[in-house]
Image (cartoon, rainbow, N blue to C red; front, side, top):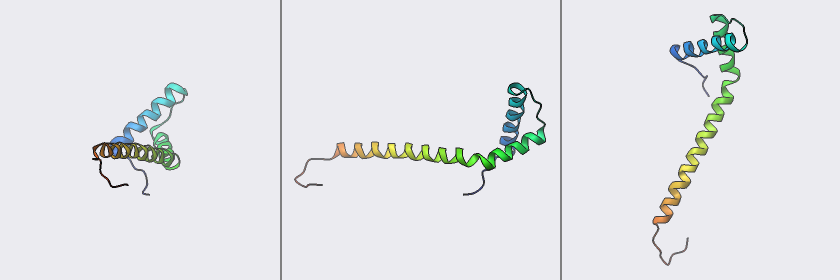
Length: 84
């Protein structure tokens, strides 16, 4: 698996969210450098958990769609003397 990376625009947005969260919820001023450092840590250490959860959810959604397609195909089947 390749490392999780963000575009500069995404990094800026996430960094701003971290700074705002620390100020509003923790009453702590977080500098930009510290926020970017925290973002790197969270991305490296926690990101894979969220990434994997997204993969599992996508796989489950895909399997449901495949089951729906299989059911739709089964309903189109014409009766014959052949047994499955």
